[in-house]
Image 1 (spheres, one colour):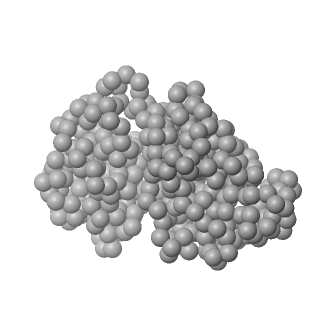
Image 2 (image 1 turned 120 degrees about the horizontal axis):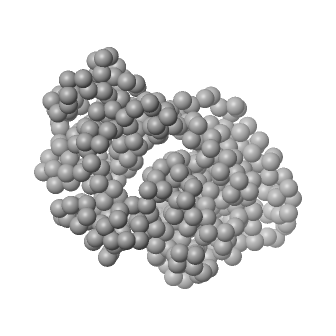
Image 3 (image 1 turned 30 degrees about the vertical axis):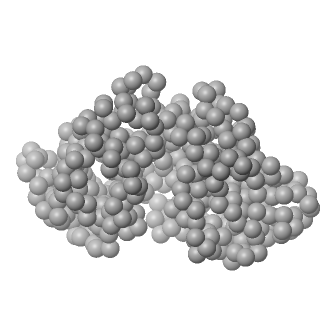
Length: 420
């Protein structure tokens, strides 16, 4: 038995022992020090790079927005102090928030992101739709235009920071992703995300554009090329534990440090399974991880790795803020995945891509959704609505053979089932 959260409520979920194969949790080890110690240790490894910084140089630090916890309130004050020890003047440092195409941050959110140095160091939000604030750097080998934040492009010294996580089509977050899509134009963001689709109409997503994979991943490769057009002096990436505290840090060369972080993350947050099951019961982990359907899709994507074709998934995702984007539900006016994909190729939107990915899983599996979304809209998306986890499980069992197998996944957004 395990407690699964939906919003703020925990539900005890029991599957009989003869059916339950495992409760899937990430095999996370303990941190090797306090968050502050881990950051200091990482920066010690960047002494050679920091020795090149000179007084009078403009230093720009890129960090993530509030939707992506990174431990920035810990590492940014330490990093600024270390830069000043290297001779960099406080007023020559600027922090740029890598919004991608997200909304601007509030003052309270800026305070939370930068911690105790708020008010001392200039903080600005990237603007993806402001031509005057963007610089064109060229095209990638696959024709993706690279336009990035002018402050970032013109900095004397650039540092990228963020967190390594799984990403459902870029393989992993962190590293190069701070540039594209982090501080890129809307046009560049859209083009890089579009790279996940195979070139041929109706051929769907590139099979290498999946969570946990970088090799041959076209989205990752586009991001690498873009970052190579404006490489940083170094990066500092964190890995957060389930408690959202810094578990490990990786700093240094923007390629090597990121790869090291990805390898660590994969070891720490993958769960080996010997077989796929008939049933997967998965929670996003409760609020705010299930605040909307777009955020909850990540748990759906990862949990699908543990499910047989035609199997049943029970997804607990409260979605108190609805879909997460005003245009998301509109994509489900297309009756099939093929029709949605065709429309997406004609008018690409990132939210449309997420809608396509959700619909694709709703066609491959039978998905029972426990949420606050209207029942009719859930059905329109190809899923089955259920009012409570208990009723959802009863519905699922009625669809399964008597000797069904099952996995329980209490924190679906932070663990990736992997066939061993």
